[in-house]
Amino acid sequence: HTPITSYTIEIRHSDDSIFSADSSCDGTDSAIIAALECSIPIASLNSVPFSLDWGSTIYARVFANNVKGASLASDIGSGGTIM
Image 1 (cartoon, rainbow, N blue to C red):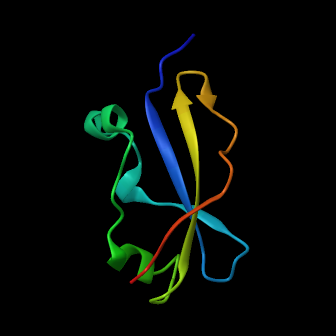
Image 2 (cartoon, rainbow, N blue to C red):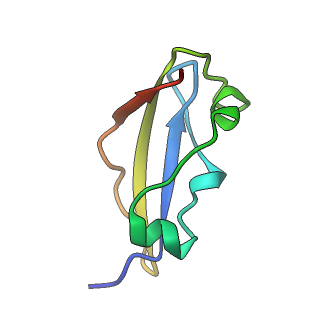
């Protein structure tokens, strides 16, 4: 068993075909790893590369990382709407 060292959170772009990692939740902050939560600023979601409009559903997937590499992606979740 190798401990998790960080998480990668990817958000789906507005065109529904591509995911990109969000740098504000890269998971390298030990507080994020301990709390298992992270907040992504709405300004980041409204901007390139995501370009999500107000009222858009946010689709995300998560990877856990350790010294051996990244895990398989989590199921894609729809955790919220930009309001």
